[in-house]
Length: 226
Image (cartoon, rainbow, N blue to C red):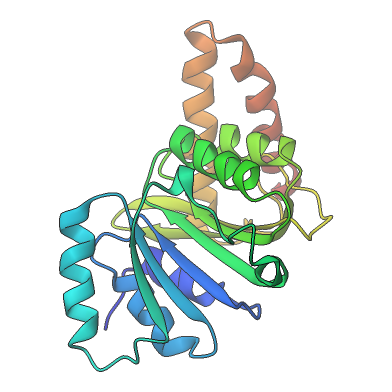
């Protein structure tokens, strides 16, 4: 199965040993199916709140030859998800990776916060790839106490995305404008940085007080590359 550059970037960043990997807001389930192939040691969970999506996906997976012990489909709101049952405390030690991609920054942040609040004793990693509001998301997950594992810039369909791997177990700081993901020797990365600078210049010109400090952070990246 051929994945888009954005989904393939997410797949390539799954480099830990996980007991459970959750393809959240799974839609057609393309990413989850690729994970089934690449990570046979983990149980892959397909989660979406839309019943017509999960019903169709369940039938497809059942007829695709995958062992049913390797996957599970959930029709559930991610913000209500419990990763273990209180009476079955052995599950607390299981490592979970939740993938949240293709939704806006506000919703991404709400989902991450809800999962952490609903599962306070679990070791959880997140792979997030928000559509917008990257600075707000980065600042938000940092405030939630998560640490950085890895980050990457990917261009897909003429648009830039940031794929960010976070963990409750990591103590590494989350740079609010990105850190190791930048390679400003690359033309694409230079273009993405210029887009961010132009965006916050427009916001500053419109009187947005927060834009000034954010713009300064992006400008400092540009100065470092000079």
